Image (cartoon, rainbow, N blue to C red; front, side, top):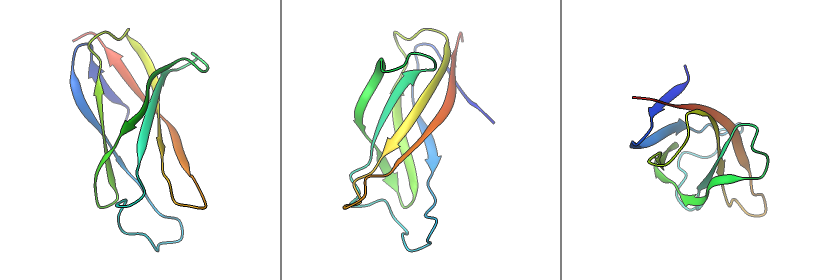
Length: 98
């Protein structure tokens, strides 16, 4: 199911992260951040390097759509798990009129 946010809201998009190896049980210490762009906008980002709040393996990405256009957006979550720096996404969500 696609997440739908109304224009003008400030809400968390919640993403459950899974570890393919099964050795990680929390995102603590990975300094997660997220980026958002409108689908098809190429390298034009609405948000970049925004902090992620996490509880265990659940990421909370606070998005403020106050001045955003209606449309489909892509969310990417970045981690610093040195020496790797994995990036999850794109995870699509919609911004719509209330």
